[in-house]
Length: 259
Ligand SMILES: Nc1ncnc2c1ncn2[C@@H]1O[C@H](COP(=O)(O)OP(=O)(O)OP(=O)(O)O)[C@@H](O)[C@H]1O
Ligand SMILES: [Mg+2]
Image 1 (cartoon, protein in one colour):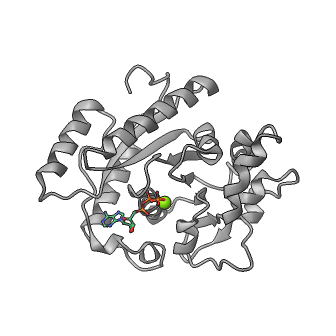
Image 2 (tube, helix red, strand yellow; image 1 turned 90 degrees about the horizontal axis):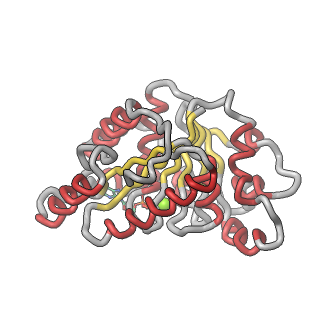
């Protein structure tokens, strides 16, 4: 099983949309995929219409002392090959608990280690904050995919995220391959074009050579999470991005100097 964290400390850059579209692409090619919603706001969980009440079992349970097996917590989705670990608002309280409960930073990695034989990929949809949940994702991941909005301010968020990844890589002593996925690209604006050029200049070789365009059909996550064909320029762009990601070599040594 390969574990991909989809993360950016900046909000609204397309993390959840990217997670869903990449997962759908993997499922289309008959891979078994586990989606893990690590965001207390639970956008991905909502996209799958998981009821809020009673509070669903899911990600939060992984952090309890007597955690059930992850597989027992994962729920089926309408899409063949995709299973979901639902997020709950209670995840927001984890930060406080971590002060008194050591080892919470590795809970996800431990849980995923028990299901490697069941899935080909685990995709982790991260919250937009440098939190215990993000640290869990980065500690567990083989790859980090950073969706980055193509505007100049978003580039600061990307630099922060890559710096965090570098620190995690150093502390876990295992390489973390990182890739940049330009999103929400507006071809008509000079600012979009300039930002894209800047991205390639700064992070050559790590950036998917194209960009996911603005596409109204990607605006409703529930449509992406439904069992209907995904069409349109945005969905097609994500298929191409996935094909590119799949042929990128794993990191064999720390990438710290290059990012
Ligand atoms: N390519 C796109 N074209 C049009 N709308 C998009 C596209 N990608 C994402 N969106 C929309 O932009 C908004 C932010 O996207 P998304 O929720 O995926 O970002 P996020 O990084 O997960 O946000 P958060 O930080 O709040 O978790 C959503 O309303 C989403 O539907
Ligand atoms: Mg999100």
